[in-house]
Image (cartoon, rainbow, N blue to C red; front, side, top):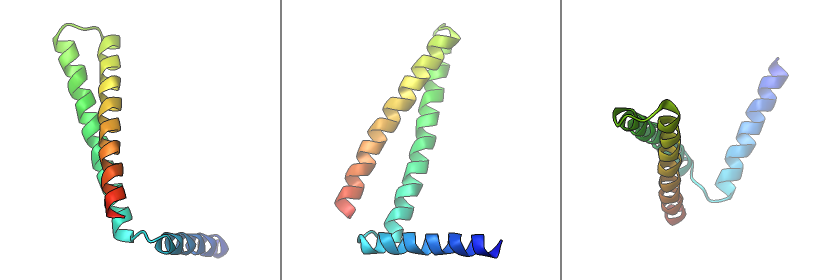
Length: 91
C-alpha cells in the first residue's frame, strides 16, 4: 500500500515540476480549472433555462431537451473560446 502511495506522490511531483518547466504557474492552472468549473455550471443553468422556456411555450419534452442540449453546447463553446484566449494572453 505504501508503495502505491509513494508512486502516486512521485507522479504528482513529476507532473508539477513538468508544468513549472513549461513556464506555467500553478496559480494559472488553479484559476483555469476554477473558471472551467464555473463555466460548466453556467452552461447547465443556460440549458435548464432553455428547457423551461421551451416547456412554457408548449414544446414537447424531446424538443425541450434538444434545445437545452444546443444551449449547453453553444454556451460552453463560447466560454471555452474566451477562456482559451485569456489563458493564451496570460501565459
